[in-house]
Amino acid sequence: MDGYQFKMGWLLVVFDLPVMSREQRKRATDFRKYLLDEGFIMVQWSVYTRALVSHNRMNTQMRRLKLNIPPEGHVRALYVTQAQWERMFIMHGPPETVIAPEKLPEQLLFW
Image (cartoon, rainbow, N blue to C red; front, side):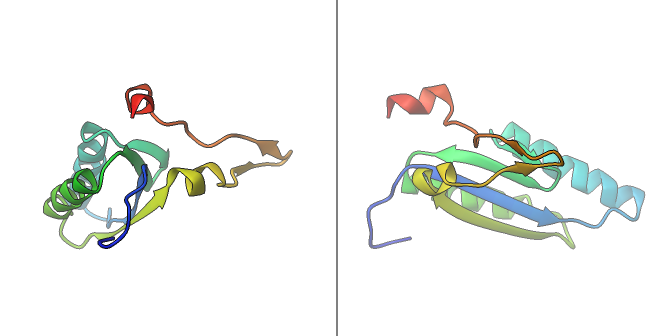
């Protein structure tokens, strides 16, 4: 992401964690709680997102995320701009229902 202007957007974290043993389930639950404590919101069971306002904040969040990945965990992180986020298709059905994507948190609207 170096070399171009950073635009406000969303860090999307998707993961697949083993949950076969009691210890694995605890680690998966702890990871979900960590994401919520960091300000992420749950989009789907294994998909979380957080709005970010600066490149430094994204780098900080990525460093912290890497330190908290459970053993045997498979985690991906993707940054999308606000404009890309707003063009997301959200489909529920049937019957088909159109829902708007999550809005930026109020404190970020001042940026």
